[in-house]
Image (cartoon, rainbow, N blue to C red; front, side, top):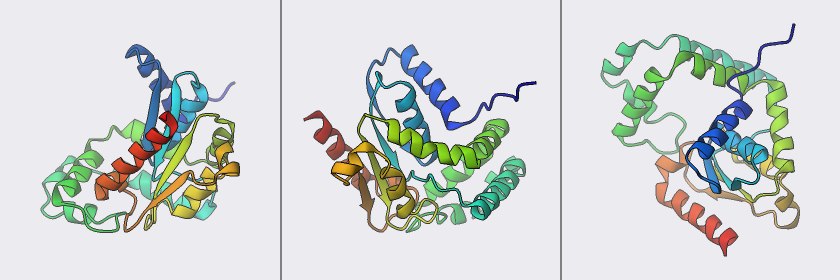
Length: 218
């Protein structure tokens, strides 16, 4: 009996993304993805090279499987997804720790509240499936192979103080792209920035994106 198809791998999400681009009539596009979204964007570029002109990954890297760390991450994530009652959003000050989690400097309170609402509202099967399917040893080791196959430009934006996706892991994944061999400048690090670059340093991220697009569309 054949094993069930994994529905929530980055590759599966990338297929959905490619179908969405087709439905929207978008024939060419740059993809920008944060964290796991970066992995999905890379897979989409691999699957649809005629459509995806390039990829910008924000706080996204990897390719190294650290067994104990991944097991802790999966255990904590599984618990968090399964036990998150909706009344959490009504508890006072619970958004405060979420405004400080995984960032270099505390976010505005509104972002802590938004993170709490997103956590509670996430569909359980999809959230748990994405967590488990994207963090297997086989899945982690596939990502460098995907990057190595890409002929489109790929740029990585890292947070200098990102403890969830440390810059060394971003540089590691970036090193597999063909452009790394002859220029080695496909990674930008944003100072005083954690895992939520687009919220912590929105102007710096926007400027970096515009710079990358300008360089490849000149």
